[in-house]
Length: 380
Ligand SMILES: Cc1ncc(COP(=O)(O)O)c(C=O)c1O
Ligand SMILES: N[C@@H](CCSC[C@H](N)C(=O)O)C(=O)O
Image (tube, rainbow, N blue to C red; front, side, top):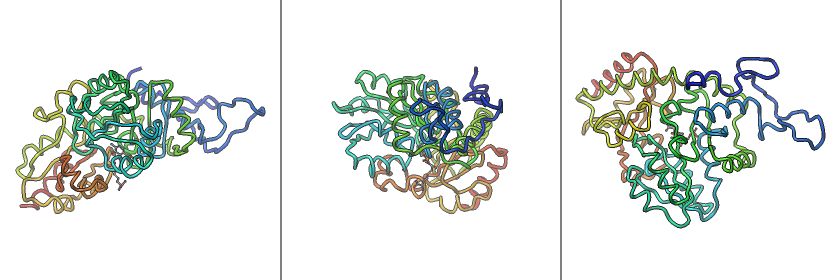
């Protein structure tokens, strides 16, 4: 089955009891057991729920994994993934990651004895040099949030394999439509499904996928033990949203291409961060490992222009934290999504105070561009 067909017919596309073509919402916390001490397929909804199971099967299929796990948020999926490891274990992590992931690592996981070395994932030599005797995994986003940096998944996974460590990729920005890290050698993929997968800014959810049976068994255990699972209503809503991922991504892409063209030719715009640009550092790797470049764009205004005035002047594009929804969203990472990273670390990693991040939606591109244009004119 090809990708778009899989989106629609994957998972448990037909309910075994009724034949319903939309997976029913099994809104039951527990399930009747016919014999005492048997091994029922369903026993309790934290352990397993048929609606959630359909979604988990679907994401496993889309990412070419063998098992998928749905969580209450992307952060919960990442937390459960790090919970595979133990006190004293060391990780090499990408220097540009979502602010909440930075916070989880520094304010939570370190307290439980996990150790981290932060590395620019574009520098393969630095990645390999950061591996220690107690390193257990390499964790990174590609493209990254918010600088859109590209890491070479295949090369990093090869380094990881050489040293007997796991590769974990946050695939939120690319989605399995644009990139499938497990096929490039990664061991675990995590998602904030709140973003493109859900696609409509109406659900907070997280997913993890692996193709390693041992990891899958442990993740199932952790998902049940920690208990940060996705409920049946949100599981249904997420799977419903995912059915149109391919169709949405095509329009996101078309619009992003038009917006990039506009930004490149507007006199108010300074540096643009977008892997589709030929002179962008990760462009060649992106061409190699992605179907297309996605619809996340970061940029700076020309020196001296007021980013706050610009984002507050937008009328169609929402000033809001999040991305990947059908509506265009804009934000200033230093103040919003990456505010939990201390300023000096943000600056060290290349996130300037005035950096602007745009999630290009699927409205008519002319309207998105007209809105950007009128807000930029206000800066004259
Ligand atoms: C790349 C990335 N990973 C993980 C997360 C965490 O996801 P969630 O907000 O669903 O917890 C986010 C955003 O929140 C993100 O942008
Ligand atoms: N205020 C929230 C930040 C949410 S950011 C959501 C998303 N990852 C994005 O990058 O837009 C928090 O502090 O957790």
